Length: 460
Image 1 (cartoon, rainbow, N blue to C red):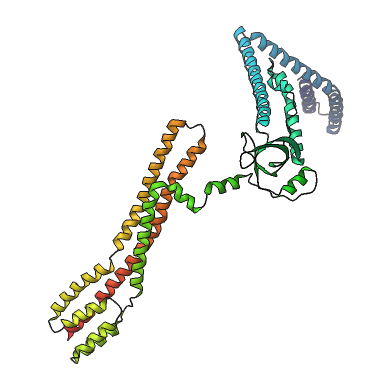
Image 2 (cartoon, rainbow, N blue to C red):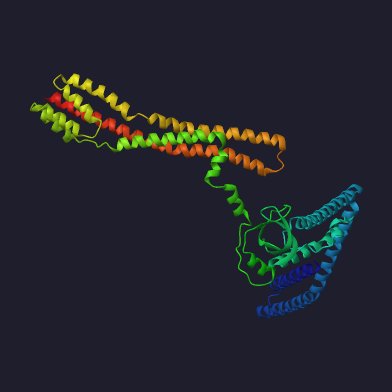
């Protein structure tokens, strides 16, 4: 600020000198020449510019020191303001800040305790679910059981579990061997040695060798069929070719659970047999109707024209013979119309509609049974499902629901009847729709040919 005031003063002084020189020229005596006055003014101007330049040089030299001094004053001012703000804080504000720090410390301790607990759970879980032939977690057991008062200390100590787990995984990837016991398919427990590679394991005992199926948490692994010589070569450290079950034994268990088509009939229980009876009934009636309809051939308009031509010449025998040649329900209707053709057209038309009722009854016979089958089969399946669910819940009432496997098995068995009900109903619906369409076509064809015959009689 001091430098700025000095620069402003110099500029004002130079301007004042110029004004004084101008006033002097205006008020000077007449005998003073103008060139001399201009020369004097120029001299004064040069002198003022030289002073201005000297002043600028001094300011430039003093500016860094002033800037440094200004920065030091600003830092000192900020510090004093901070101290003043702290000094103005009340006792309550300081206690609040302390409580916030204590809460943050408590959160940090809880995080450390949680992480230490996770590491302990990891160690216990690894020891519990370790499969046959897998190496144990090499960590001090007292470290897992010990509870430290300081969560940070407990977390720091249990970091050893992470290193031990990584080392165990590295060993499993390369394969490992360990002694143990396994159970054969007939339930015999034998001692031997396991070889593990990742999730796969094999066992070799005194009298048997094979693959291993093991459920986590189970008592003993079960030996399954495998090449014994290849398994023994593997355990001896030699090269061996073995089958790998990438599902971890789940595919074999699924095969055992499925049991084949016959096992579904057994699981269906009592209600599966009425559904099978309906399926056979629908199939037999459908085949009968299909074979009947397959024999029919739709006559053409030329057939009716030939019959009318025979009637016009009075040859009823030929007209009847032409009517009998058609392999269609319309043949019987046409014979009846020929017999009444001597009457009026109204009587012949009434005869036609009377015969059509018989054709309709014959064409749609047995179709209602197929429709009832399609509607009843899923209801019987639902009835079997409800009955099976009632039995399942009765078992839950007695034994509880701790193990979900028996519950899931009971529900799956209960749903078998619904499955069979839908298997029967869907084809029965399709069969009924096809046969109904065919029967309606036969009725319409018979009616069309009969009306053509009646209209020709009217025109005559």
